[in-house]
Image (cartoon, rainbow, N blue to C red; front, side, top):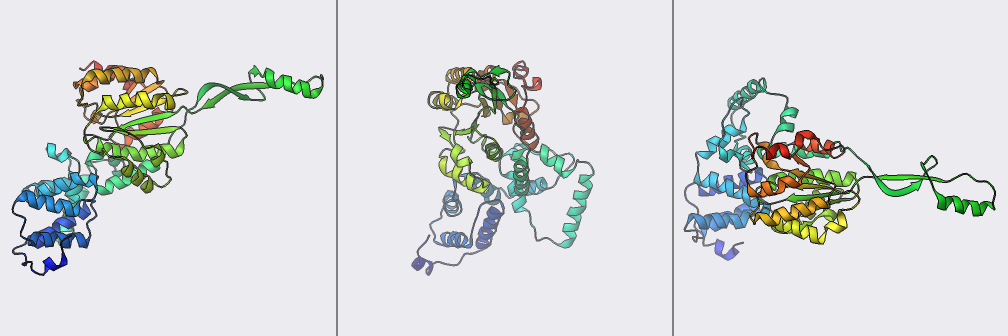
Length: 412
């Protein structure tokens, strides 16, 4: 914050810079970054101090004032480049706001935050005639599409607006999670058990003084298998991992023995943080515990740390493992292949969740993907509500042939 004494000597801003700064702050606020009046005043004071000589100085000054959390950097960066550097890009973002029957959005439209910026930059204070025309366009478009609920369930998490993401989180919270149990080697007393419990029978005989007694019986215990989740939070998976964490929160509160790890450049156990009943409190605890969100990717090193420090503790009694990552590792492939092989030996069922499966023409061409593919039991997408619903159903059933990884290995 600038000193109050220095504000008295500041010259008034010329042109529309002050108005544009306030408009930019409003765009950030509607895009999900909390920008208060105090931050806007600080930005106006910084623009008048006379030390902003280059565009880079202006960028980092506004960044220091408006960005308070690490996950806000990406939205701010895109908003700044669109708002201050590329005015023509605003027209493209406006067009993205409307649902069209056939449209060809460039690669930039697939970047994280573009849909939210399009919604934030949309002028909500237009005339009634323009609003009526836009409503008519939306009604015409809806005749060529499915219902809003079906569209939302199939929509890519990365392409959702702020409102759609909120609806998706509510749908995940209401998601029905199927339960499955497996037979263990332990026994429990049962009136009609298939095995005679000799220990309890002899104890009962001693208490009866030699009289005839009924044979005590026992049966095998049934328990839900432990579930271990390894989730990639690198920059290429961050948008999907955020929504996936809401699914894991519902899963952790519905069943026992769920262990969750996040990894990017390091491995972080967030099981305790995710067990909060309130979803907002749980996400806040997770954000405070994770230090490498949206950073690089070191899959092999993270799996090695898990295999050496955690595998014997959590991979017990037929544990199932969910590995959520795109497989784009920056390290040498030999380490990744060795650690995947070791992880597979300790796991009864290993399911790989890959956001890249949202593309119909996916090919396992990357070295990390080819190293991981032979050691997984199932290969599933994790980019939409439908994919999460299918995953919840799959956890309670046997492996599906449609998600056999050999199907994709044949395409390489």
